[in-house]
Image 1: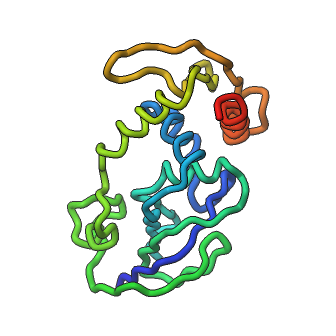
Image 2: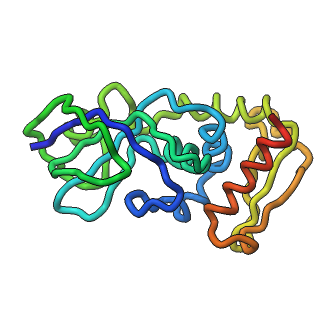
Length: 200
């Protein structure tokens, strides 16, 4: 039996429940997406998945929302939906209220819409929604005068790297070097603090 709960989730940059950070850093313009949610409050709830036959937790959709808010590092709570066949009692999730229950089974733990259970869990959100990405890039380009860099393992990743339509590049204001920090999370957090201080 799958249960779906409304709840609140506390994003944490050092979370053991959702250790996505390092694996996600190489994705296209990922820092733009994270910074957008660092500044802007998520409008849709994060969807949390936890099955009792797996030790792993998943956020799908909602990973970028989670990380962006976590990087604020102010211990706030965001609206979420938990889909699970287990009893959940962890300090990062609170105020569970049962929304619905269903006899659908998870056919594959990888969250995909090939499964009715996943579609039921996600509700009116879409799993892969390109519609939100371009407005994020446009917001970044409109609100930041400079581009900002993060060096990690010899590669520099940028916030505000380019405008997709015109490919116009802006002057680089600063590059933060991750080797100077105890973790990649702390390096990105400091970069975002600097952008907020100088650009907003």
